[in-house]
Length: 231
Image (cartoon, rainbow, N blue to C red; front, side, top):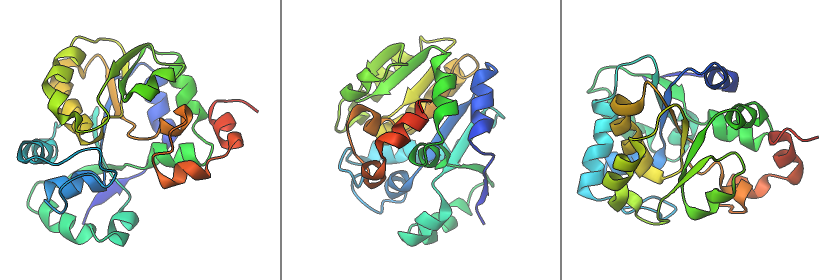
């Protein structure tokens, strides 16, 4: 049985507004494909799964940080069941100590539904380090942009770890596919008490004109305006 809690968007917004450092690391279907060797790359084609990546990805879960400010999240279970992943995931998780998971779709759903304004407003008040592909450079609330290559950015994991380990007192937004999970895992002992690290995945893409997921194409201008706090 996978135990998942859903405290809601405001739970995370309050942490950012309160200056409380936390990390949110999300395991989606691509990460499980990698860990369980169910497929050879992400379904979007952005990352080929190497043996090293598979080993390091598994450690994110098996060697997870036991800390109240380190939140491990999982993609919603009905979807994982629908795409026939859950029957593979559950036996694998049953072999390790139980995890209190957070619901991994909380940010994406809020953005999709035009309810993401509280998070964007919270980020605007903080120093935000944006880690992701080049088009995310246009996001207005990004204080520092750390680029990653669009495909197979796993090869940059060591250099990214070194660069990001120097930041303090910031919110670091990650949009770097499976590599982001390993980065957050590695960086938490180094900067986790000073920085919040959030795996936003592909959430920011449509705000930069890139519809990388099917739900992005369904988001209207009204939805974007609501998320930006505009009426």
